[in-house]
Length: 353
Ligand code: 13P
Ligand code: SF4
Image 1 (tube, rainbow, N blue to C red):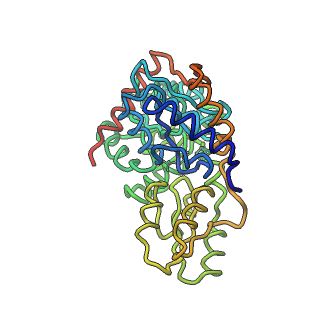
Image 2 (image 1 turned 90 degrees about the horizontal axis):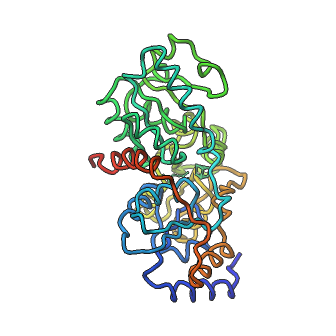
Image 3 (image 1 turned 60 degrees about the vertical axis):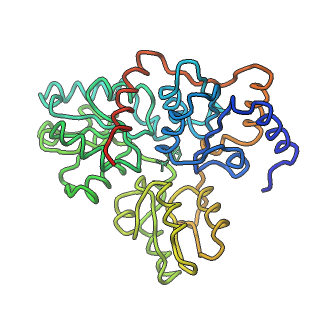
């Protein structure tokens, strides 16, 4: 639906009044009505770097989800303020790893005498608490655009990785990009004692995968891939690595949202693409490339409901409050957690390549 013209005018006016004091970051899964006001759009890696690269902006308005705003707060200076226009914009995957559960898992590894050889790696899609845990224990943060580089680094530091919280990104990267086998990976279930694994399984594993997943990308199935190939002969299937292993294995290409966009931009006119990622992005790509046939991989609608919570009314409210001198919905991470999380984030930003 087209944006409400009154709200568009108000957002434009508020941004103009704030000028260079405000910098608006927009994740690729955001609604069109919001993304039109982003100073920069990106995947979670690019947005983390952009936040760190804007020390002059007093306010960073993060149109994305909670863990991204936390990371931005950690990477910005003490005087900068990070604002999430709707505090209910969380991430169900990030919520699947809670600090107490991860500490319990680490205790299990410690009792078995294997914590010392284990390097914790967390996907960006995790709370600041989890990133702090990883930083305290010599690990690294990764995103979907640098997971292989992060795992290469981790396996130089130790012989085992505890990968949080997305089992699919961990498994897909280990098996499809690093030559590990499915048998090298075990699935740690935080709701079961000892993760539901035997000591032998934990000792033998190279990748201990946390039982978390993305509710959006997890919906694509092998059937969705087979169906689209039947319906559209010659179609290229391009999916995000948060998809299940069998989906990624059956696809033609896999990569982060930024990679998906670049691939579509470079694709020849007339080519057909089925995209296994969030629907706001797929629709935008289809509109921007009318010379290419771009479709959603599944028949069912598949927005990220929490990304979609950031809408134009919330953005207008946050911006107008700033104009009035009030900071609403500020995201802050306590100094101790931020310090350790920053170690793990800086380690990611320092990865070669
Ligand atoms: P990227 O931005 O790293 O592609 O991750 C996708 C995602 O699910 C963000 O929540
Ligand atoms: Fe979380 Fe998935 Fe939504 Fe990303 S798309 S914010 S991982 S639920």
